[in-house]
Length: 482
Ligand SMILES: [Zn+2]
Image (cartoon, rainbow, N blue to C red; front, side, top):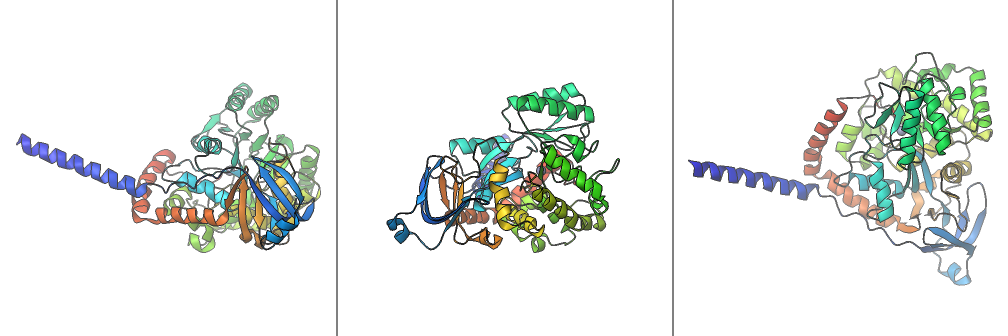
C-alpha cells in the first residue's frame, strides 16, 4: 500500500516538475539584443538641430557617450556616403511609465519599443508599483539589455484615497516634506504630485522640492487650479478645466465652456511663473476612440504588445458613451490653448503617458507629434520641443542638442522629418548614449519577441497567471486615469 502511495507521489511530483520545465522552456524570453559598444561615425549627412542650424554634407563623430565632432565631410566620405541621410537629436518622451511586470521579456521588449521609434530618453512620471524603473535604470548602467536613458519620479505623492499602490500618502505639510526628502534621498529626478493632495500638503511638497532642487510635476490637485498650484510642470492640462468638486473624467466636458479670461490667465501664469505644460494629447485621443469595440481596428499599434498585456493592463473604463466622446470633443479647445502657449514662448513638452490605456511605448511619441501638428504647430517646431525643448527641463546639460560635447543621442533618417512627420517611418539608425542600433537589427529582435508572445503557451498560461496577480493587486480597479 505504502509502496503504491510512494509511486503515486513520485509520479505526481515528476509530472509537476515536467510541467514546470515545459512552462519554463515555453515562457523563456528570447535573449535580449546585445548592447553595442559606444562610438560611431555618420558620414556626409544633413545635420539638423530643429529650430537651429541645418548643415548639409557634414559628418558626425561619436566617441564614448558624447558627440565629439560635427565637421564638413571629406571628399571620400561624400563619395562613400549612402543616399541622402538626415541626422536629428533623439526624441525625449517627457511622460511615460514602465510596466510593473517585467518577466518573460515584457520589460526588455517594452524598453526596446521606445528605441525603435527614436525615443532615446524617457521621463518616468511615476512608478506604479515601485518595481519598474530601477531595473531599467540598472540596465542602462550595466548594459544587460537595450534601454533608453530614464529620469524618474519614483513613488507618487498623494492624499488619502489615492489609487496607486506605490504612493506616499500625506495629509500634513510635515508629512509631505518628509516624503519629498525620502524621494530626493532615493536619487529621483522629480516629484510626482497627484489629484488628492490638500493645499497644506501641496505647500509642503513644493517647499521641500525647492530645497532639494527637484521639479514638482504631475496632476494639479482638485483643491486648486493651474494658475494657483505653483507646479513646475503640469501634466495632461490638469487644473485648467475646473469646477468645485468635479473630478476626472468629468473635468473633460468643462473644456468647451472654458471662459476666455481663464485661457488668458493660464497663458499668463505659464509664462510669468515659468510653468511647463505636458499635454499628452495622445492619452485622451485614445480614450476618446474607445467607443469602437475592436481595439486593434482603431489602435493597430496596440498589436505590438502581448495580448495578455493588452487585456490586463488596458481595461475599458465603465463610462457612458458621452464621457468617451468628450475626450475627442475637447481636443480643439485643448489644442487652441497649447498653440497659444507655444506662441507665447511657454515651455511646452511632448510626452505620451505610455502604459496608460492604449498608449503604446514609442509609437505614441509619433502620434503625440502628429496631434501637435493637428493643433497647428509647425513640424520643425514640434521637433524642437520634443528634443532640445524637453531636454532643457532635464538635469543632463545639452540633452537634445546636436553639438560637440552633447550627449550622443541621435537619429538618422533617409528623408527629412522636419519637412513631414511621415518621415518618422524612414528611421534607419538610432544612437542612444553613444551606442549605434541599426533599425533592421532592432526589428529582427522585435519579431523574435513577437513570436514568443504569440505562442499559445505564453498567451494562455501567462495570461491566466497575470490575470490572477492583477486581480489580486488591483481588485478589479477599472479607472484608467494616469
Ligand atoms: Zn502618467
